[in-house]
Length: 310
Image (tube, rainbow, N blue to C red):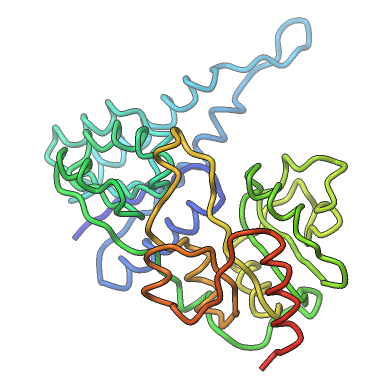
């Protein structure tokens, strides 16, 4: 099978999903082309020219840069004739491009990574796909009403996520949390009593206030991101962690999900013990993990388990 994989654009967790599926499809014996869509978006976003007055002028706006970059997908489809185009997230690909691809007989599979929080936006895109793969089955009936749709749990990459000694001793900590600094997460973590606990925060925390007590806990420069290899090493170097589900969603009815988050799977694969916010799937898969609901409760759990490393 010939598969064209289109990079999602942003180089955060969705890019990890893209890389994981790419490696898996190659491992299954598929012919896979990995389209560098991120670089194409960056090129057109930054394309410009100097005016006679010596000022730099962009040639296209954000919408135009997406439109120009997406033409590369159509070109590869026309030249290479893949059997299926796989796109993770698909928030930066125009829907009419998907329709054009399908009109020529190529199947389109969309891997939706933001369920249930952004299922409204994802359902709009689902109409333009032959198969929709979602990461949380809470609203799967809405997807199935459109067409073939399946729930696939989050996965880990055994080449990246494995137990053992960390590569870098600088990553050592009592407690580590890697993720995006959503406002609800920031408020929760700021309310935890971290006195005497060596905390390492990593991921996307660029919106963190200068006065936040969490800033001194950042494991890297606030303007940097944390790739999956470094994330896994932080996990192997820490004593414990916790999962905090995001609370930000398109609508209040899209906040509560059932599936485990990707970081939970990766932490478990790296052998990192963690406390969990209770959810349907993690109660089924890892029922032995302690649960918490309030910041004070998490602080107590952290101290209790750090005092009992066995």
